[in-house]
Structure formats: structure tokens, C-alpha cells
Length: 336
Ligand code: AHM
Ligand code: MG
Image 1 (spheres, rainbow, N blue to C red):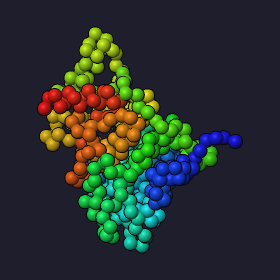
Image 2: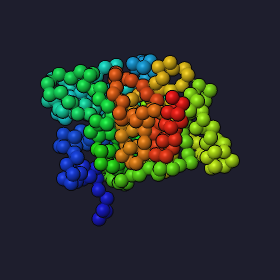
Image 3: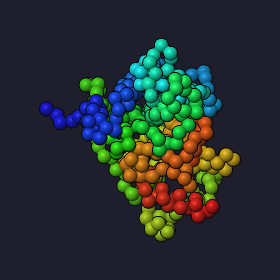
């Protein structure tokens, strides 16, 4: 008999051992994981399932929605609204929050997600993913508003992502380390394949969209210039570059073997934000990376300390191997 344990077993054991998972949170995570299985089926079908290409719509950020963005969003809503564990949901693909309908019991958690991250990769058969973040509803009255969601990332009760790649893998933290579960398609179950994931503190690999180089701020330019200078430069080593254009896939590589990921703000954005969204991209990824021993900042400040002012707020992101993120952050702070 195999000694591998399932997601359900893992969650029950966590609940028993250190009480880090109340029953409603356990149910929530299982439901999200089940929704990810359904999304994986659509992703895998591709052209055969008529799920590729764009829909005739735009999301709140003015991006053209892909069919799979919409399908994944619907799957997550449908799976989560009736279970009694949630009060409301927020999504990259919805302008405002989605309340649990009155006909269902209201739970004590808030769920945020990017249903299909890396949308530009859908049609070209490159890894994509689902990212999610779980907050507690801190007020006790029945109503929920967007304000209830505006909590700093350090208050997340759980976070995770599912990567649809050569394997389908669910990565999860409930604030007690990071665990990875691989989908066993024949059995239809999530199997624990890596526990206590740790990101090495040092790395020789960076991930950034180099085509934006001319727009970067000086600290980012300095960091990348030094990496590119190789063995004769100040870093005295050669660096390698990877850019998948799916944050989920880039972060997954960093969790598996270290590295630094950056999506900095650049001169085209007077707001000094970035491309990525704080509440359903940077916060969950920041939580996971920190739980694996890495760091996540916006260049100057820890991402998990930022109090959001709106649901779709954007943020600059620097995350991954501790010593490299510290270096980039130092360069920003030195610059003032
Ligand atoms: P999406 O949520 O619309 O897919 O956009 C976010 C994605 C990230 O996954 C990725 O890191 C980034 O956008 C890629 O951006 P670029 O097209 O500049 O390479
Ligand atoms: Mg995204």
C-alpha cells in the first residue's frame, strides 16, 4: 500500500495537530481544490472542448477576456457559493464582489481569486494557473462590502495556487509552511508530493520581462545590469534568465529551485503601481513565498503589510530567494 497522503488527510491532520485549520476553512480549501480539478479538465481539452480563444468581453481592467478566464471564474463561483463556508468572493474577472446568495447560509470567510492566471499562454499550450487567497470576515453582521476585503495580506487565513502544466499541482499554505499536491488523474485525487517546501536563500536565476527595460526605475536597472555583468561584474557569477509570462509558473519554478521574480512599476505608470494585482496575485504569492522562507516586497515595503485601498489595486512585485529580494529592496531604499 502506498504511504502517500491525500489533501483531505493532510488537512485533517493539520486540524488535529495544530488547530491551524477550522472546519469551515478545510471545507473551503477542498471546494477550491475540486473547482481546480474541473478547470484542469477544461484546460486539458483545449481546442477539443472549444475553450480556446477570446470571448467578446472585457474585464474591469480593460483586458479582453479569454473563454477560459470566464469558464474558470464561473466554475469557482458555482463551486463555492452554496457550501456555507463563504460570505463573498472577489475575482480578477468581476468588477465588484460577488455575495453569497441569500438562499444559502453565509460563512465566515472571504475568497479572492485570479481564476486563470497567465491568460496570454492559454492558446499556446503553455502553463497557466489559478491563484486564490482566503481572508476572514472580520465584522460580525450579515452584510458584506468591498471594505471587508481591504485587509493587509498578513491577515490571510490561507493561500494557494493550482498550476496546469505537465502535471497539475496544487500549492497550499495555511500559515504553517507550504505543501504541494499532485493531481492523480486516474484516482481523481490530490496527493501530497512535497511538504515543507523551502526556497534557497541564494540564486543565480532571475525572471523579469526584459522588453520593459527602458521603462524601469534605476534600482531595477542596476540590479539586472549587475546580474548581466556575469563573473567579471560586482556579483562575480553568471546569472540565468527565465520568463514564462505566467506568474504561477514563474513562482512555481522559484519554489522548486529558487530564483527571483520581478514585475516592477515602470515609467509608463505615474501611480508607481505595477501590472500585477495586490489582492489576488501578489498577496497569495507573497504569503506562499514567505512561508517557504523567501521574501516578497514592492521594492520598498513588505507586500503583506500593505493595506489595500481597492479590490483591483495594482502593486509592484519583487519576490523569491531571500538574499536577492533583500538586495533589490536595499537598492530601492538607498535611492530614496
Ligand atoms: P493575467 O492575470 O491577465 O494573466 O496577467 C498576469 C500575468 C502574470 O501571470 C505574468 O507574470 C504577467 O502577466 C506577464 O506579463 P507580460 O505579458 O508583460 O509578460
Ligand atoms: Mg493574473
